[in-house]
Structure formats: C-alpha cells, structure tokens
Amino acid sequence: MKKLLLIAAALAIMIGPVDAGKSITIKGSDTMVLLNQRWAENYMNNHPGAVIQVTGGGSGVGISALINGTTEICASSREMKNSEKTKLRERWNTLGKEIPVAKDGVTIFLNASNPVSELSLEQLRNIYTRKVKNWRELGGPDAPILLYGRESSSGTYVFFKDTVLLGADFAPETQTMPGTASVVNAVSKDPNGIGYGGVAYASGVKHLKIQKTPGAAAYDPTQENVKSGVYPLSRNLFFYLKQSPTGDIKKFVDWVLSPAGQEIVTKVGYFPVK
Image (cartoon, rainbow, N blue to C red; front, side, top):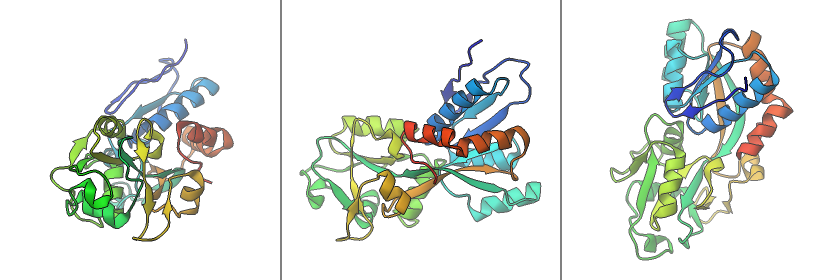
C-alpha cells in the first residue's frame, strides 16, 4: 500500500503498515513541518517498514514534548533556552543533543505593491514596537503599517523577539497568525502589511533586504548570504533529542544530514546545513 503523510499544525497521522514496528516521532516547529514532511515521505519510500510521525504546533510545543517524553525528535527553529535544558536535565539527567539540520534566513514579507525595498534591524524594531507607525516614515506611501506575526509558541516568534526586538514586547496591535503560511497570505492581500517567517514561504509577496545597522550594506536572504552569516537574520534549524541518536533514529538523522536529505532541504526552499 502506498504510504501517505498528512500534516496539520497540531495533528499527526501515522503512515505505513500497522505491523511496521515502532515509529519515529518528530514534533515542533511549524517552520519546519513541510521540510519534516518531505524528509519523512522520502525516507519511508526508500526504507520499507520505516514509520515516521510528524506533528507541528511550534518549537516551544516540540521542546515541551521532548522534556515530557512524548516525542523522540523535537524540531525547533530556535535554540533551546537554558531553562528548558535545565528541565530536560532534571527529568532525564541529560542536557540533550542539538543537531543543526538546515539553515534559514528569517524573511521580512511585504505586499508586492509596497515600494520599500530595505530596512535596518533598528527600523524593524521600531515598526514592531510601534515607534514607527506609517510607511511614509520609511520612504513608502502615506499609510498605516499593519503588523502580522506568529504565536508565542513559535520558534520564529522567539527568534524575532530576541534578535530584532532585543527582548522587547511586540506591539499589542500585532495580529497573531497560526503559521508562516498564514502570515504570507495576510500580507499578500494587505497593501500596508508587514510580516516575517522562514524563507521557504516567501511566495506571492516581496521580501526586504536587511541592514544590520543603519547605513550598512543591505542583504537578501540568499543561500550565500545566510551561509556566510552576513544576512542579519540567519539561523539554524534544529533537531533536538534527549541523547545522541542510536538505532533507527540514528539511521534517519544520518540520512537527513546526507546529500540526499540535504537535497530535500534545497527543494523545500531552505539551505543545506553545510
């Protein structure tokens, strides 16, 4: 029977023969859920008997599941916090195993009609804390800036808050969306909208070049710029495990990091980890 994998943000459906044995569970990042789906589909197609479950819900949800012992692999678009590592150690007497599996450049999305082409991190911070409220202040039209963002369980939310807002709170006017695809969809329909998310979702919208500091060179989220780190919002995408992988999990992780697995990273729209 042909294997299928259906993914929803908070729903996992097990694929494969009922008697295929113990499954591998991956839970967490919505940014990575499409990538995890493709990895799972390809791996199961080429490894008869393998069964992989994929669930989204956000990086925070995946990390909590790893701590609680309800997933074997946590997919996360941010690094684990020290407080989370402490909880993992208290529960399992381990600090866990961090494995970068892909690279991403968090992308700033604008409506295709917006003439603004680049911003600095400081300008982004001012936008999302409402110090700047009108596109006119940034060289755009005389129109209010409408903010779109992610829910607090999202690793991208945490990364953006830490890296761009420097820990400050998002403006209350920020409209919280359940996933990056929803952010992109909203911005594509809103001439005054701005949003952020993984580069693989940048379709149907324009993306900004980003400056690390005002007046510095502005960079696109390309593979070269993300790999070198000159794009200011470059990041790794991670697998987290309670310990170094063994057995079937090691075979899967090794395949993810192999040329075949990393080719899928590129096809999905992210960048190879090496």
